[in-house]
Length: 383
Image (cartoon, rainbow, N blue to C red; front, side, top):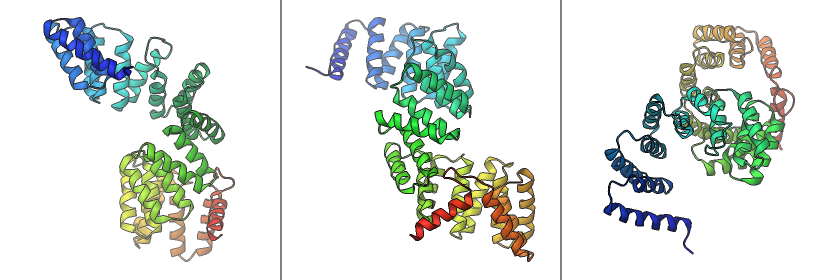
């Protein structure tokens, strides 16, 4: 028995034959366009739609289908322009709002995507991935609580949706609820072992528990699913740092910033590894990249202060330290730079006390403070 793909291809061949006999038949052109679109043959779908629009230029159906082709070809701006044009003319089909919301999301216009997608959540006549798209838009906007609420409402009605369960697990990671993150990651991975969101969440939970071996394996699996995942590269880097593998951690952080060039924390992670390796020029460049992304973030000023101190540029280090601590009196890099300034002035004991307070002022998910975590990590490596 022919497969569904073979049946679709055979029907497409028959319809194309009919079209040669009746080239202005809009019904034939509509079905040919839809079949080609379903088969991922976007150029052929576009050709059929162009032929239809040459016959009926203002036809909203074919213009809407052209937006679908644009989405398939990842031509987000073209899809946005087509959909907004249709809506501006009074067309209000939910399919147009869906296409527009999807295009806006992938084009990075998250607030506008949220506006288009939210009204579709209560509808039953839209594609099944509307909750996923809406959750993703909210997550990108930093509206984590709202995204969690959408995901939980959806899962109450669709408990077997492994994709949304994976998204929910990662949302709980970002909300700092590791127990819930683990529960939903396990649920998602039980149904879909290669769900990227769930793998990222599971790996992060394992990092929080300082289980570097399991975390490394989980992030390796995640990178096998998507080698361009910046979060997976960051997780892999942190797992290696838990094993005090600076070279491996640096290499993975370099991949992470390649795929997440606007994520400040990843630039900081890379910079600190470079600093630990004594590569001051590279560390300064990484802190500078972070500073250019947000000039009011204390840790970037503090990191640059540390580099300046290591280079013996004490006046510059002092000014940067003041700025870091003014922006955030608890800034770790600012306090560390301050300790270097104290050491230089001959106040080594005060410097030591400052560092100890900074390490004991940061709680970690694995239990206790950052100081406790450092003791555990070094003890494991000694063993």
